[in-house]
Amino acid sequence: MNLLNRLPAWVAQHVVALRTVLLLTVITGLAYPLALTAVAQVPGLRHAAEGSRVTGTDGRTAGSSLIGQSFQDAKGRPLPQYFQPRPSHAGDGYDASASGAGNLGPESVVDTLPLNGRPDSGRQSLLTQVCARSKAVGALEHVDGARPFCTADGVGAVLGVYRADGTSGAVTRVVSLNQACPARPFIARYHGVTVRCATPGADYGRAVAVPVRGDAPAHPRVPADAVTASASGLDPQISPAYAALQVPRVARERGMAAADVRRLVAHCTTGRALGFLGAPAVDVVELNLALDRTHPVKGTR
Image (cartoon, rainbow, N blue to C red):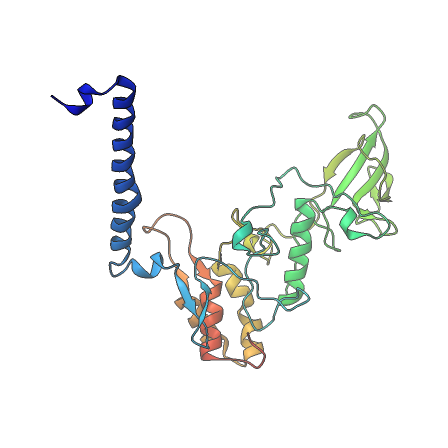
């Protein structure tokens, strides 16, 4: 007779449960991990399984080709001898332990202005973040950083419009919501009413926010990926257009011919996945390491 049949029902149930736990532990806790480890050692997969590590000029691991890095000095200024990645909201920038996005959407156009000159008391809208980055990239690359809905001083061009009947009727008052006094508003008048600068801490909740496109070109010189972060905050790739914008600066700083820099860019450019998914991209980490190996400059990291 089966031993389980001679045991009390509750004991037999526990024995069956224990056997199941032991079997699943062997399969999922031992056999499955060992099988995956063995598969990961197959030529062509081992590099990715080990984290797609890249080696620096000193022969030591310098990071991963799958995770971006910030190429800035101690004060957060871009190092001109390096290609710059896209912005990152992961911690202080490309922190793999704090992956994340800025979580601001297209309706984020009005800033919270800082009080008494304390930057930590304010908050930039997504629009102003994009405008400020575009202005900074334009200055770094010596190109026009203007883009639609941005002021010349790098904030969102948004008016707070007051009307006689709330949302309709004649315009009675206009405020440039993202330009704190004593800034000069980006336009002098709107519908015949003088535009005023904004007072930090003032309540403009009754105003209708009106973004103003301005006369910036429809296709800005600064590409979109230069002013917006990825969803993970860790992507190491930039568009070929953003890489091309940076070629003259990097070539000048490293004493290279622009054609030689372009060849390295092309070497670090990947095409569309499966030939049709996504878009071509340039891995900034691999590109900067290649520059350090072939054309090092004094003070590179």
